[in-house]
Image (cartoon, rainbow, N blue to C red; front, side, top):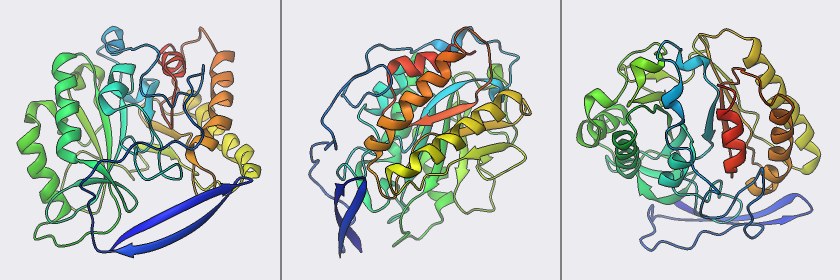
Length: 314
């Protein structure tokens, strides 16, 4: 059953009501709904267009470098635009995110009727995995020296399928992505090996081979302490983010470090972002001019300036 959910934020605490109905899709596309209006600052941007773009920033990175050695901007819940302020995590379209320099995508697909609609929990995001693949492949075709990394997670409930999630994903890749545009190995490639390609981090149950396993702790170190019920928990969240970014600087250069600055579970994503992104900006600014491996930084409502700062560490 599809759930209908409304939320109100009072003094940093969400009061919620949930109902359920059987319809998994909404056929009319509602307006994006932001919690705090729209604004574009040096560290937070919830407008519909980035201040400036960085479409070809990977072209200057050495082919010999491992993907794990790069400082790389990303978005958390990349396609979460609809469902209200308690759900929305981004305001730029996927195309705009790619043009702005985002190279890590956090894609959440529900497995429903042998299809892959994009969801944030039970909220359908008015797109499918086909749309995501087509947009990503089009971008890589126009910018063949770039690399895309995509976490692909199974979201919400699986219903009315006659094939496995792996089979549906594989079918989509065969239909909407050229084989030579998808990284086929289980190891982390070099930049040269991955140029013009999509690297999938598989985050769903399957014993079959497809991309790099998201939970492979010998390959990926992840910081994702997302539960932030009140403003009093934000400092703890930031401490974890900062600790993992420092670990990325000194850690194994053959291991991917993935740090999520996002959070939910009480506060709206935009509220958390308004507290975390300024701290991230200041953290990066103190190291301005240095060449450091920070790994992947997955953010909600990033600004073009924060993206440029992350790119600058390469």
